[in-house]
Image (cartoon, rainbow, N blue to C red; front, side):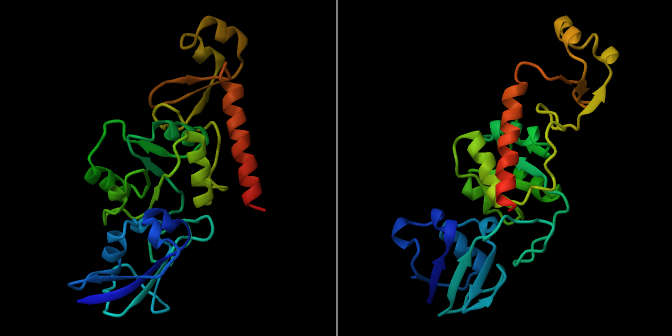
Length: 253
């Protein structure tokens, strides 16, 4: 029988029982297991972890637990920069890209509005397929499904805690350093394609006549051919972008 002591820090306590939050407690189990397996058996998905100390020394997730070990598990203390190698040796990402599960459609739209590359599971794919896409395309998986994040194939991922889409965006901004990659109004809200400008002449037959008469500037998505202009929703969308910029300015000081 193995007996170890565990302690989770910061927001990782969201995943464990209230009676154990902020405390060091014992766990007993009958056979050898990895650090990852032990931690996830407590409810904490491995992508949420920034570093692990075993008996005061840094340890990787695939290491085996030894009887009597004291294991301390930490989240990141600062917004993660995926271009910098992590304590746990995860591969770096030069440009963060995202994969959102089927329950995060409104969040996906807002991330695309900010110019972030975010694919969306509109077909309600299996957890296995979502993990494969996230891994194969080097995408940060966004989900409210803990079991999905625990899949070993998932390298980078975030458990979304909030219910309201704008709050979810701010949650991600607090977790990931996105200052250098946000480019508002550059991605198609419908299909995630990159927008390109088109002339008024090209837009003539593709927008309502009244819109064509009153607007000078148009963009379109070469992939799905949707046309964009500063219409009735512009003020609302731009106000959201300004709130995000203000939040980023505060966090970068």
